[in-house]
Amino acid sequence: EAGVAQSPRYKIIEKRQSVAFWCNPISGHATLYWYQQILGQGPKLLIQFQNNGVVDDSQLPKDRFSAERLKGVDSTLKIQPAKLEDSAVYLCASSQGKQVYNEQFFGPGTRLTVL
Amino acid sequence: QKEVEQNSGPLSVPEGAIASLNCTYSDRGSQSFFWYRQYSGKSPELIMFIYSNGDKEDGRFTAQLNKASQYVSLLIRDSQPSDSATYLCAVEYYNFNKFYFGSGTKLNVKP
Image 1 (tube, chains in turn cyan, blue):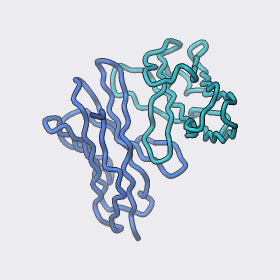
Image 2 (cartoon, helix red, strand yellow):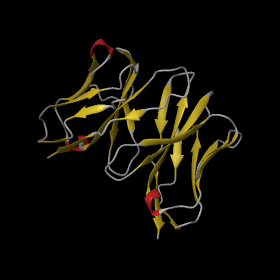
Image 3 (cartoon, chains in turn green, purple):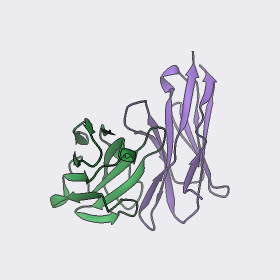
Image 4 (tube, chains in turn red, purple):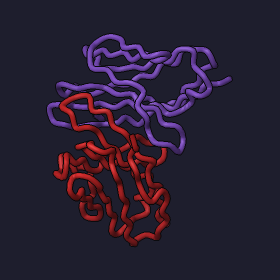
């Protein structure tokens, strides 16, 4: 079974530039999560999709971050414009979307450096 | 109060010892608990989950849940240097479909 795919793996941009990340979840997984993990901290949920609908985006800085999940499969996360404090690893995870015990499977992450 | 709290460590134990990792959480109804391991520069991977009071064992790992005291712990028996990593505690709240991670405890197992 193929895992969660993410691209790119690394990205370096200057502040005020824009950037986009892509995620392809495990086939059949209904729930998709985007996390931001700053060095030394735990993952912080940015947005959660159930199929192609948003379940939770309460911690997404909507003035600069946006995300979509087309057709309930792939997802993209965009930052525009980027700030220095956006430097982090962006993790995508997926789960089956069951009622309970939703094990999340993580992709390799995208390490973003904002200069 | 944070939803999930962990001591950031580092926790240092000698090889062969028992490592004990703890996590406290806010009680907001029905939930299950997950322990993830994250090696430096890698993504989190699930070790085990628990949802009932008591102990759950899987090989060298034992998860313990005490709902009355609102804590969950992970014991690692016969610790190995390869267990050196950050251990993340996570809680899933069913009733409002939320998932929270703690900040993680860094474990160092010394040969």
